[in-house]
Length: 179
Image (cartoon, rainbow, N blue to C red; front, side, top):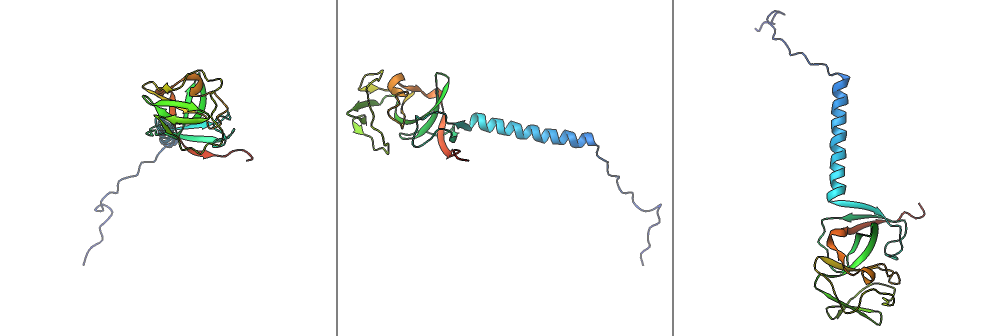
């Protein structure tokens, strides 16, 4: 038969430390700080969020749309990108890369002698263009055209857009008009 230990013989239970309000406040602020840091790193190096305030990418992106871009994407012809030009955020479609030759004649765009297969509704005029065709895209730049081709504020005015000015490939468009 086992004996019940007397209070003098019973092992002592470790006492739980009471946590103060300061401890809970400190852990809360550490968690908030870590979350803010993670979101900042994500939005600085991986993703970008922009609101379109221009009609240059119409009809794909409309004025007021929220666009999320992926900064680490490997770009290819036809991708819609977000880029900076003269301090302004712009949206456009990549047509050619450094070393490619772009020619626009009779509203037809050709790259390296091949016509582009595009879903663009508007013709591509060259009147008012600041560059001459055929145009060889410089290295470390891309040739960008607006989807709304009547708007010449793209590579037809400025030449190649530097790769360093590209903020990312548009991966998500959220329509905000009428909400």
